[in-house]
Image (cartoon, helix red, strand yellow):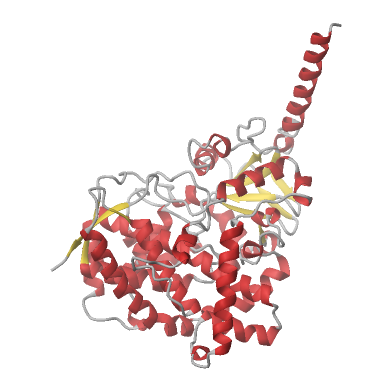
Length: 502
Protein backbone atom coordinates (compact mmCIF):
# COMPACT_ATOMS: atom_id res chain seq x y z
CA UNK A 1 0.00 0.00 0.00
CA UNK A 2 1.49 3.34 -1.02
CA UNK A 3 2.04 6.08 1.62
CA UNK A 4 -0.80 8.21 0.21
CA UNK A 5 -3.24 5.31 0.38
CA UNK A 6 -2.11 4.52 3.92
CA UNK A 7 -2.62 8.13 4.97
CA UNK A 8 -6.07 8.23 3.41
CA UNK A 9 -6.97 4.96 5.13
CA UNK A 10 -5.85 6.31 8.50
CA UNK A 11 -7.79 9.55 8.00
CA UNK A 12 -10.91 7.60 6.98
CA UNK A 13 -10.55 5.33 10.01
CA UNK A 14 -10.18 8.31 12.34
CA UNK A 15 -13.22 10.02 10.83
CA UNK A 16 -15.20 6.81 11.13
CA UNK A 17 -14.24 6.49 14.80
CA UNK A 18 -15.23 10.11 15.44
CA UNK A 19 -18.57 9.51 13.69
CA UNK A 20 -19.20 6.41 15.79
CA UNK A 21 -18.23 8.29 18.96
CA UNK A 22 -20.66 11.10 18.14
CA UNK A 23 -23.61 8.91 17.11
CA UNK A 24 -23.30 5.52 18.80
CA UNK A 25 -25.96 6.31 21.43
CA UNK A 26 -28.44 8.06 19.11
CA UNK A 27 -30.65 4.99 19.57
CA UNK A 28 -30.66 5.46 23.37
CA UNK A 29 -34.28 6.61 23.65
CA UNK A 30 -35.55 4.44 20.81
CA UNK A 31 -34.45 1.33 22.69
CA UNK A 32 -36.67 2.45 25.56
CA UNK A 33 -39.65 3.01 23.31
CA UNK A 34 -39.44 6.80 23.50
CA UNK A 35 -39.70 8.85 20.26
CA UNK A 36 -36.56 10.74 19.42
CA UNK A 37 -36.16 14.09 17.70
CA UNK A 38 -33.98 14.20 14.62
CA UNK A 39 -30.32 14.54 15.60
CA UNK A 40 -27.04 15.11 13.77
CA UNK A 41 -23.42 14.25 14.58
CA UNK A 42 -21.73 16.81 16.84
CA UNK A 43 -24.72 19.20 17.01
CA UNK A 44 -27.28 16.72 18.37
CA UNK A 45 -30.89 17.94 18.26
CA UNK A 46 -30.02 21.64 18.45
CA UNK A 47 -27.97 22.69 15.39
CA UNK A 48 -28.58 26.41 15.96
CA UNK A 49 -26.09 26.35 18.85
CA UNK A 50 -23.41 25.98 16.17
CA UNK A 51 -24.89 27.62 13.09
CA UNK A 52 -25.85 30.77 15.03
CA UNK A 53 -28.41 31.54 12.30
CA UNK A 54 -31.18 31.80 14.87
CA UNK A 55 -31.77 31.41 18.58
CA UNK A 56 -31.52 27.79 19.70
CA UNK A 57 -34.97 28.11 21.32
CA UNK A 58 -36.48 27.80 17.83
CA UNK A 59 -34.97 24.30 17.57
CA UNK A 60 -36.67 23.45 20.86
CA UNK A 61 -39.95 25.03 19.74
CA UNK A 62 -39.97 22.98 16.53
CA UNK A 63 -39.47 19.72 18.45
CA UNK A 64 -42.28 20.73 20.80
CA UNK A 65 -44.64 21.46 17.91
CA UNK A 66 -43.79 18.17 16.21
CA UNK A 67 -44.51 15.98 19.25
CA UNK A 68 -46.89 17.86 21.58
CA UNK A 69 -50.06 16.25 20.19
CA UNK A 70 -48.76 12.69 20.20
CA UNK A 71 -46.24 12.48 23.04
CA UNK A 72 -45.77 13.94 26.51
CA UNK A 73 -42.04 13.16 26.47
CA UNK A 74 -39.52 13.09 23.62
CA UNK A 75 -35.86 12.12 23.52
CA UNK A 76 -33.31 14.72 22.40
CA UNK A 77 -29.52 14.97 22.33
CA UNK A 78 -27.30 17.78 23.56
CA UNK A 79 -24.38 16.98 21.21
CA UNK A 80 -24.19 13.24 22.03
CA UNK A 81 -25.68 13.29 25.54
CA UNK A 82 -29.25 11.94 25.78
CA UNK A 83 -31.74 14.28 27.43
CA UNK A 84 -35.51 14.24 27.73
CA UNK A 85 -37.96 17.00 26.82
CA UNK A 86 -41.45 17.19 28.30
CA UNK A 87 -44.26 18.61 26.17
CA UNK A 88 -47.14 18.93 28.65
CA UNK A 89 -47.81 21.69 31.19
CA UNK A 90 -48.70 18.98 33.73
CA UNK A 91 -45.18 17.58 33.66
CA UNK A 92 -43.72 21.10 33.64
CA UNK A 93 -45.61 21.91 36.85
CA UNK A 94 -44.54 18.67 38.49
CA UNK A 95 -40.89 19.29 37.70
CA UNK A 96 -40.93 22.88 38.97
CA UNK A 97 -43.30 22.47 41.91
CA UNK A 98 -44.96 19.30 43.14
CA UNK A 99 -42.04 16.93 42.45
CA UNK A 100 -39.33 19.55 42.93
CA UNK A 101 -37.20 17.27 45.13
CA UNK A 102 -36.60 14.99 42.17
CA UNK A 103 -35.49 17.91 39.94
CA UNK A 104 -33.77 20.08 42.50
CA UNK A 105 -30.85 21.46 40.48
CA UNK A 106 -30.18 23.30 37.21
CA UNK A 107 -27.89 21.88 34.52
CA UNK A 108 -25.80 25.05 34.30
CA UNK A 109 -24.23 24.17 37.66
CA UNK A 110 -22.33 21.34 35.97
CA UNK A 111 -20.24 23.79 33.97
CA UNK A 112 -19.54 26.39 36.67
CA UNK A 113 -16.24 26.49 38.57
CA UNK A 114 -16.56 28.10 42.01
CA UNK A 115 -12.91 29.17 42.03
CA UNK A 116 -12.77 30.73 38.57
CA UNK A 117 -16.30 32.14 38.52
CA UNK A 118 -17.29 32.90 42.14
CA UNK A 119 -20.03 35.37 41.16
CA UNK A 120 -21.88 32.82 39.06
CA UNK A 121 -21.13 29.93 41.41
CA UNK A 122 -22.79 31.74 44.32
CA UNK A 123 -25.89 32.62 42.32
CA UNK A 124 -28.99 30.88 43.76
CA UNK A 125 -29.81 29.73 40.21
CA UNK A 126 -26.53 27.79 40.08
CA UNK A 127 -26.19 26.50 43.65
CA UNK A 128 -27.21 22.90 44.24
CA UNK A 129 -28.48 20.72 47.06
CA UNK A 130 -28.08 21.94 50.61
CA UNK A 131 -25.89 24.87 49.51
CA UNK A 132 -28.85 26.27 47.54
CA UNK A 133 -31.26 25.65 50.40
CA UNK A 134 -28.99 27.45 52.87
CA UNK A 135 -28.32 30.39 50.54
CA UNK A 136 -32.00 30.78 49.73
CA UNK A 137 -32.81 30.95 53.45
CA UNK A 138 -30.11 33.59 53.89
CA UNK A 139 -31.01 35.83 50.94
CA UNK A 140 -34.83 35.78 51.05
CA UNK A 141 -35.25 37.89 54.24
CA UNK A 142 -33.09 40.58 52.64
CA UNK A 143 -35.72 40.93 49.92
CA UNK A 144 -38.75 41.04 52.19
CA UNK A 145 -41.67 43.40 51.58
CA UNK A 146 -40.47 45.68 54.39
CA UNK A 147 -37.02 46.06 52.86
CA UNK A 148 -38.45 46.67 49.38
CA UNK A 149 -40.75 49.26 50.95
CA UNK A 150 -37.80 50.92 52.69
CA UNK A 151 -36.05 51.22 49.31
CA UNK A 152 -39.11 52.62 47.55
CA UNK A 153 -38.35 56.34 48.23
CA UNK A 154 -34.96 55.79 46.60
CA UNK A 155 -36.73 54.28 43.57
CA UNK A 156 -39.04 57.30 43.32
CA UNK A 157 -36.13 59.71 43.43
CA UNK A 158 -34.27 57.80 40.72
CA UNK A 159 -37.41 57.64 38.55
CA UNK A 160 -37.69 61.45 38.57
CA UNK A 161 -34.10 61.65 37.34
CA UNK A 162 -34.81 58.97 34.76
CA UNK A 163 -37.65 61.00 33.25
CA UNK A 164 -35.41 64.07 33.01
CA UNK A 165 -32.72 61.94 31.38
CA UNK A 166 -35.19 60.64 28.76
CA UNK A 167 -36.31 64.21 28.14
CA UNK A 168 -32.74 65.38 27.52
CA UNK A 169 -31.91 62.38 25.34
CA UNK A 170 -35.07 62.90 23.28
CA UNK A 171 -34.01 66.43 22.41
CA UNK A 172 -30.84 65.02 20.86
CA UNK A 173 -32.38 61.81 19.49
CA UNK A 174 -31.49 60.81 15.92
CA UNK A 175 -34.12 59.73 13.41
CA UNK A 176 -33.78 56.12 14.57
CA UNK A 177 -35.07 57.05 18.02
CA UNK A 178 -33.62 56.07 21.38
CA UNK A 179 -32.17 52.69 22.24
CA UNK A 180 -34.65 51.58 24.92
CA UNK A 181 -32.34 48.89 26.33
CA UNK A 182 -29.56 51.41 26.95
CA UNK A 183 -32.01 53.78 28.62
CA UNK A 184 -33.42 51.06 30.85
CA UNK A 185 -29.97 49.76 31.74
CA UNK A 186 -29.02 53.25 32.91
CA UNK A 187 -32.13 53.22 35.10
CA UNK A 188 -31.58 49.77 36.62
CA UNK A 189 -27.89 50.47 37.20
CA UNK A 190 -28.74 53.67 39.06
CA UNK A 191 -31.67 52.36 41.10
CA UNK A 192 -30.04 49.08 42.09
CA UNK A 193 -26.69 50.71 42.91
CA UNK A 194 -28.50 53.14 45.20
CA UNK A 195 -30.97 50.67 46.74
CA UNK A 196 -28.39 47.93 47.32
CA UNK A 197 -25.10 49.77 47.89
CA UNK A 198 -26.16 53.32 48.70
CA UNK A 199 -24.04 54.81 45.91
CA UNK A 200 -24.82 56.61 42.66
CA UNK A 201 -23.56 55.29 39.34
CA UNK A 202 -24.15 58.77 37.86
CA UNK A 203 -26.01 56.98 35.07
CA UNK A 204 -27.99 60.04 34.02
CA UNK A 205 -25.04 62.42 33.75
CA UNK A 206 -22.58 63.21 30.98
CA UNK A 207 -19.86 61.53 33.05
CA UNK A 208 -21.25 58.23 34.35
CA UNK A 209 -19.08 56.04 36.56
CA UNK A 210 -17.47 52.93 35.07
CA UNK A 211 -20.29 50.89 36.60
CA UNK A 212 -22.60 51.79 33.71
CA UNK A 213 -20.16 50.45 31.12
CA UNK A 214 -19.35 47.37 33.20
CA UNK A 215 -23.06 46.61 33.59
CA UNK A 216 -23.40 46.41 29.80
CA UNK A 217 -20.57 43.87 29.73
CA UNK A 218 -21.93 41.51 32.37
CA UNK A 219 -22.99 38.82 29.88
CA UNK A 220 -20.60 39.59 27.02
CA UNK A 221 -18.95 36.16 27.31
CA UNK A 222 -22.22 34.25 27.20
CA UNK A 223 -21.53 32.58 23.83
CA UNK A 224 -18.14 31.34 25.01
CA UNK A 225 -19.72 29.87 28.12
CA UNK A 226 -22.47 28.15 26.11
CA UNK A 227 -19.94 26.76 23.62
CA UNK A 228 -17.87 25.45 26.51
CA UNK A 229 -20.91 23.68 27.96
CA UNK A 230 -21.47 22.03 24.57
CA UNK A 231 -17.85 20.83 24.45
CA UNK A 232 -18.17 19.59 28.03
CA UNK A 233 -21.18 17.52 26.97
CA UNK A 234 -19.11 16.03 24.16
CA UNK A 235 -16.19 15.26 26.45
CA UNK A 236 -17.06 15.61 30.19
CA UNK A 237 -13.47 15.13 31.48
CA UNK A 238 -12.62 18.63 30.20
CA UNK A 239 -14.40 20.12 33.23
CA UNK A 240 -11.69 18.68 35.51
CA UNK A 241 -8.86 20.73 34.03
CA UNK A 242 -10.40 23.57 31.99
CA UNK A 243 -13.30 25.93 32.58
CA UNK A 244 -14.74 29.09 31.02
CA UNK A 245 -16.16 31.91 33.14
CA UNK A 246 -19.44 33.58 32.28
CA UNK A 247 -18.09 36.89 33.60
CA UNK A 248 -14.97 38.45 32.07
CA UNK A 249 -12.11 38.73 34.55
CA UNK A 250 -11.95 42.51 34.50
CA UNK A 251 -15.74 42.78 34.95
CA UNK A 252 -15.67 40.42 37.93
CA UNK A 253 -12.66 42.26 39.37
CA UNK A 254 -14.44 45.61 39.00
CA UNK A 255 -17.57 44.52 40.86
CA UNK A 256 -15.48 42.77 43.50
CA UNK A 257 -13.47 45.95 44.06
CA UNK A 258 -16.49 48.24 44.28
CA UNK A 259 -18.14 45.83 46.70
CA UNK A 260 -15.10 45.91 48.97
CA UNK A 261 -15.08 49.71 48.94
CA UNK A 262 -18.79 49.94 49.73
CA UNK A 263 -18.42 47.49 52.60
CA UNK A 264 -15.54 49.51 54.01
CA UNK A 265 -17.56 52.75 53.81
CA UNK A 266 -20.49 51.13 55.60
CA UNK A 267 -18.33 49.95 58.44
CA UNK A 268 -16.77 53.38 58.86
CA UNK A 269 -19.98 55.41 58.61
CA UNK A 270 -22.55 55.17 61.44
CA UNK A 271 -25.09 57.06 59.29
CA UNK A 272 -24.75 54.61 56.39
CA UNK A 273 -25.24 51.72 58.79
CA UNK A 274 -28.77 52.96 59.47
CA UNK A 275 -29.92 52.30 55.89
CA UNK A 276 -32.39 49.44 55.73
CA UNK A 277 -30.97 48.02 52.51
CA UNK A 278 -29.60 44.77 51.15
CA UNK A 279 -25.94 45.50 51.87
CA UNK A 280 -26.57 46.25 55.54
CA UNK A 281 -28.64 43.09 55.75
CA UNK A 282 -25.71 41.10 54.31
CA UNK A 283 -23.29 42.72 56.77
CA UNK A 284 -25.56 41.68 59.62
CA UNK A 285 -25.75 38.19 58.13
CA UNK A 286 -21.95 38.08 57.96
CA UNK A 287 -21.70 38.71 61.68
CA UNK A 288 -24.44 36.19 62.42
CA UNK A 289 -23.26 33.37 60.14
CA UNK A 290 -19.55 34.11 60.00
CA UNK A 291 -19.41 34.65 56.23
CA UNK A 292 -15.93 35.39 54.93
CA UNK A 293 -15.22 38.41 52.73
CA UNK A 294 -15.41 36.39 49.51
CA UNK A 295 -18.80 34.93 50.41
CA UNK A 296 -20.20 38.31 51.45
CA UNK A 297 -18.99 39.92 48.24
CA UNK A 298 -20.26 37.20 45.92
CA UNK A 299 -23.66 37.12 47.69
CA UNK A 300 -24.22 40.81 47.08
CA UNK A 301 -22.68 40.86 43.60
CA UNK A 302 -25.16 38.18 42.55
CA UNK A 303 -28.02 40.50 43.44
CA UNK A 304 -26.42 43.35 41.49
CA UNK A 305 -25.60 41.45 38.30
CA UNK A 306 -28.99 39.70 38.22
CA UNK A 307 -30.94 42.89 38.83
CA UNK A 308 -29.16 45.12 36.33
CA UNK A 309 -29.75 43.07 33.21
CA UNK A 310 -32.96 41.16 33.88
CA UNK A 311 -34.98 44.13 35.13
CA UNK A 312 -33.72 46.33 32.28
CA UNK A 313 -34.73 43.74 29.72
CA UNK A 314 -38.24 43.34 31.12
CA UNK A 315 -38.75 47.12 31.33
CA UNK A 316 -37.50 47.50 27.74
CA UNK A 317 -39.95 44.98 26.33
CA UNK A 318 -42.85 46.28 28.41
CA UNK A 319 -42.28 49.74 26.94
CA UNK A 320 -42.10 48.15 23.48
CA UNK A 321 -45.50 46.50 23.85
CA UNK A 322 -47.08 49.61 25.34
CA UNK A 323 -45.73 51.60 22.38
CA UNK A 324 -47.12 49.05 19.92
CA UNK A 325 -50.49 49.09 21.70
CA UNK A 326 -51.40 52.73 22.49
CA UNK A 327 -54.84 51.72 23.83
CA UNK A 328 -53.15 49.52 26.46
CA UNK A 329 -50.72 52.34 27.21
CA UNK A 330 -53.66 54.64 27.86
CA UNK A 331 -55.28 52.10 30.17
CA UNK A 332 -52.10 51.94 32.19
CA UNK A 333 -51.89 55.74 32.25
CA UNK A 334 -55.43 55.96 33.58
CA UNK A 335 -54.72 53.35 36.24
CA UNK A 336 -51.66 55.13 37.69
CA UNK A 337 -53.30 58.58 37.71
CA UNK A 338 -51.34 61.72 38.49
CA UNK A 339 -50.82 61.66 42.27
CA UNK A 340 -47.60 60.28 43.75
CA UNK A 341 -48.17 56.68 44.76
CA UNK A 342 -47.29 55.12 48.08
CA UNK A 343 -45.59 51.73 48.22
CA UNK A 344 -48.91 50.11 49.07
CA UNK A 345 -50.58 51.79 46.11
CA UNK A 346 -47.90 50.85 43.60
CA UNK A 347 -48.11 47.26 44.87
CA UNK A 348 -51.79 47.28 43.89
CA UNK A 349 -51.75 48.21 40.22
CA UNK A 350 -53.41 45.16 38.63
CA UNK A 351 -53.30 46.31 35.02
CA UNK A 352 -49.70 47.52 35.25
CA UNK A 353 -48.65 44.22 36.77
CA UNK A 354 -50.62 42.33 34.11
CA UNK A 355 -48.66 44.21 31.43
CA UNK A 356 -45.39 43.06 33.01
CA UNK A 357 -46.51 39.42 33.24
CA UNK A 358 -47.71 39.46 29.63
CA UNK A 359 -44.32 40.85 28.59
CA UNK A 360 -42.57 38.08 30.52
CA UNK A 361 -44.77 35.53 28.78
CA UNK A 362 -43.70 36.71 25.33
CA UNK A 363 -40.07 37.45 26.22
CA UNK A 364 -39.21 35.15 29.09
CA UNK A 365 -35.72 35.54 30.63
CA UNK A 366 -35.50 31.73 30.60
CA UNK A 367 -36.52 30.31 27.23
CA UNK A 368 -36.07 26.67 28.25
CA UNK A 369 -35.36 25.27 31.69
CA UNK A 370 -32.85 22.43 31.98
CA UNK A 371 -33.38 20.56 35.23
CA UNK A 372 -31.10 17.87 36.63
CA UNK A 373 -32.71 14.73 38.02
CA UNK A 374 -31.72 14.47 41.69
CA UNK A 375 -33.82 11.44 42.70
CA UNK A 376 -34.95 8.46 40.60
CA UNK A 377 -38.12 9.42 38.76
CA UNK A 378 -40.48 7.83 36.26
CA UNK A 379 -42.18 9.64 33.38
CA UNK A 380 -44.92 8.05 31.30
CA UNK A 381 -45.65 8.86 27.67
CA UNK A 382 -49.17 9.26 26.27
CA UNK A 383 -49.02 5.74 24.84
CA UNK A 384 -48.33 4.29 28.30
CA UNK A 385 -44.59 3.65 27.80
CA UNK A 386 -42.61 4.70 30.89
CA UNK A 387 -38.99 5.68 31.28
CA UNK A 388 -37.03 5.64 34.52
CA UNK A 389 -34.74 8.63 34.94
CA UNK A 390 -31.59 8.41 37.02
CA UNK A 391 -29.86 11.11 39.08
CA UNK A 392 -27.75 13.21 36.73
CA UNK A 393 -30.11 12.94 33.77
CA UNK A 394 -31.36 16.24 32.33
CA UNK A 395 -34.97 17.12 31.56
CA UNK A 396 -35.85 20.13 29.37
CA UNK A 397 -38.98 22.23 29.93
CA UNK A 398 -39.74 24.22 26.73
CA UNK A 399 -40.85 27.42 28.47
CA UNK A 400 -41.03 29.58 25.35
CA UNK A 401 -43.08 26.96 23.51
CA UNK A 402 -45.59 26.66 26.36
CA UNK A 403 -45.81 30.45 26.67
CA UNK A 404 -46.61 30.77 22.97
CA UNK A 405 -48.88 27.81 22.37
CA UNK A 406 -52.28 28.92 20.95
CA UNK A 407 -53.81 25.91 22.68
CA UNK A 408 -53.28 27.73 25.99
CA UNK A 409 -52.97 31.39 24.99
CA UNK A 410 -55.27 32.80 22.33
CA UNK A 411 -53.24 34.74 19.74
CA UNK A 412 -50.02 34.13 21.68
CA UNK A 413 -47.93 36.64 19.73
CA UNK A 414 -50.40 39.42 20.58
CA UNK A 415 -50.00 41.58 23.68
CA UNK A 416 -53.11 40.97 25.80
CA UNK A 417 -52.46 41.99 29.42
CA UNK A 418 -56.04 41.16 30.43
CA UNK A 419 -54.99 37.49 30.46
CA UNK A 420 -53.19 38.18 33.73
CA UNK A 421 -55.80 40.33 35.47
CA UNK A 422 -56.93 39.00 38.83
CA UNK A 423 -60.53 38.78 37.63
CA UNK A 424 -59.30 36.20 35.10
CA UNK A 425 -57.25 34.29 37.66
CA UNK A 426 -54.05 36.33 37.42
CA UNK A 427 -50.56 34.92 36.97
CA UNK A 428 -51.29 32.31 39.64
CA UNK A 429 -53.86 30.59 37.43
CA UNK A 430 -51.31 30.05 34.67
CA UNK A 431 -48.55 29.08 37.12
CA UNK A 432 -50.78 26.46 38.74
CA UNK A 433 -51.51 25.02 35.29
CA UNK A 434 -47.81 24.80 34.42
CA UNK A 435 -48.16 27.46 31.74
CA UNK A 436 -46.34 30.51 33.08
CA UNK A 437 -42.74 30.75 34.26
CA UNK A 438 -41.95 34.47 33.95
CA UNK A 439 -40.22 34.41 37.35
CA UNK A 440 -39.78 30.66 37.46
CA UNK A 441 -41.94 28.65 39.83
CA UNK A 442 -41.84 26.43 42.88
CA UNK A 443 -39.13 26.64 45.57
CA UNK A 444 -36.69 28.15 43.05
CA UNK A 445 -38.99 31.00 42.01
CA UNK A 446 -37.03 34.26 41.66
CA UNK A 447 -36.33 35.60 45.18
CA UNK A 448 -36.07 39.16 43.83
CA UNK A 449 -39.48 39.11 42.14
CA UNK A 450 -41.09 41.64 44.50
CA UNK A 451 -38.14 44.05 44.23
CA UNK A 452 -38.01 43.74 40.44
CA UNK A 453 -41.75 44.33 40.00
CA UNK A 454 -41.56 47.42 42.19
CA UNK A 455 -38.69 48.94 40.20
CA UNK A 456 -40.39 48.23 36.86
CA UNK A 457 -43.75 49.62 38.00
CA UNK A 458 -42.15 52.76 39.44
CA UNK A 459 -40.41 53.45 36.12
CA UNK A 460 -43.53 52.75 34.04
CA UNK A 461 -45.62 55.10 36.19
CA UNK A 462 -43.30 58.05 35.65
CA UNK A 463 -42.70 57.35 31.96
CA UNK A 464 -46.36 57.06 30.87
CA UNK A 465 -47.28 60.14 32.91
CA UNK A 466 -44.71 62.23 31.11
CA UNK A 467 -44.51 60.72 27.62
CA UNK A 468 -46.45 59.09 24.86
CA UNK A 469 -44.20 56.16 24.02
CA UNK A 470 -44.13 55.32 20.32
CA UNK A 471 -42.34 52.68 18.27
CA UNK A 472 -39.61 54.00 16.00
CA UNK A 473 -39.66 52.55 12.44
CA UNK A 474 -36.22 51.02 13.09
CA UNK A 475 -37.83 48.49 15.46
CA UNK A 476 -39.01 45.28 13.84
CA UNK A 477 -42.73 44.52 13.91
CA UNK A 478 -42.61 40.86 14.96
CA UNK A 479 -41.33 39.22 18.16
CA UNK A 480 -38.32 37.38 16.77
CA UNK A 481 -35.80 36.66 19.50
CA UNK A 482 -32.16 37.55 18.95
CA UNK A 483 -29.35 34.99 18.91
CA UNK A 484 -28.21 35.41 22.52
CA UNK A 485 -28.90 32.62 24.99
CA UNK A 486 -28.76 34.71 28.15
CA UNK A 487 -31.34 37.46 28.56
CA UNK A 488 -32.99 37.01 25.13
CA UNK A 489 -34.32 40.15 23.50
CA UNK A 490 -36.05 41.39 20.36
CA UNK A 491 -33.76 40.91 17.39
CA UNK A 492 -32.34 44.20 16.16
CA UNK A 493 -33.07 45.99 19.41
CA UNK A 494 -35.91 48.15 20.67
CA UNK A 495 -35.92 51.73 19.36
CA UNK A 496 -38.54 54.10 20.75
CA UNK A 497 -39.64 57.71 20.49
CA UNK A 498 -40.73 59.54 23.64
CA UNK A 499 -43.16 62.37 22.90
CA UNK A 500 -43.62 64.86 25.73
CA UNK A 501 -47.13 65.02 27.17
CA UNK A 502 -48.47 68.47 28.08
